[in-house]
Image (cartoon, rainbow, N blue to C red):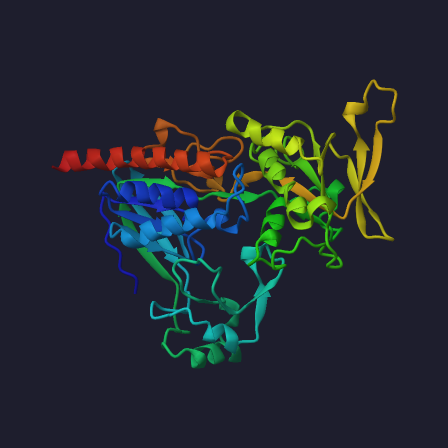
Length: 433
């Protein structure tokens, strides 16, 4: 049974991505007791699924490793994984939370040796890789997963494979009788760092994501490029495994559109500019990228990166909202159809029908959690993000729970939210002192 000590001076952080880890660390390193709650089997969130950051094109693993080391070393932080908040009641300085913890079927004695995964045959869609490949029924979510502990897929429970996994474990770490737990926690303040999810590309019918194998999303491309990802770091076409040397990037895929997402997610332009460097990285001068854009949002420090990409002769830009994607059945190439607005007034034909090896949709960001469906006393805006509002009491949004933000701004936002939460619990301490 999980035991957690929490009082009205405890800060609960919901979400263990980069924003949640930042908020938890900032509060804990100021001496506050923090409970960090993550619904997945490990911390890391979307950042752990990235291949590179923009604009420096560095790898996220370094920053992740530093944050995880700080969390492991800080006794003020209690981490609960596979846990979700079911209910919140109370007011600033005096919240009560119900937290449900799903069974991992693997206890803390796990050494992550991998024997259980080798013993089983069952395979399931790999959520970490956006279902682009399969994983075993006994698995470690990813290489840097924390806790560094395997998970038994609940769909395997009651099957012979589950017994094989248990028999293979020399550490006696597999407990197939684990049940869901429900914890009642107290908190003085709550930081919601529940992150974002990519917009469902299946809904964008003109782009054929649900019909054409060689139309993928920006988040899927990140996993493909990762050497530990579903293709081993190869930039290839899902349809036939051939190298994708000519890649098209469609901006605002479903964003800024009253039929899909009304808002601009702000990071998509920079994400695509970053990804436009990937074909050259893989194939040198043979790699080619074409960015189809409405307009490019590369403000402040990102302008230099935009200009650097523009100067790369392997990258082309076409100002256009792509009307549709069709399929060249002979080559299985997606064909982009639309009008090039830069040809307007030139007397040249604006229309294009451009085939590419692979098309990447820059899908927008939306909140991971439907806060409108939760009666927890939060002011939610039209897009579903949490507003900064005094009416929220001692509850604060961090990172992409507050808006569509890049990693740098999400970390800054999380730090600010941690400071606000600290002020609330300090007031509680003063009143009780």
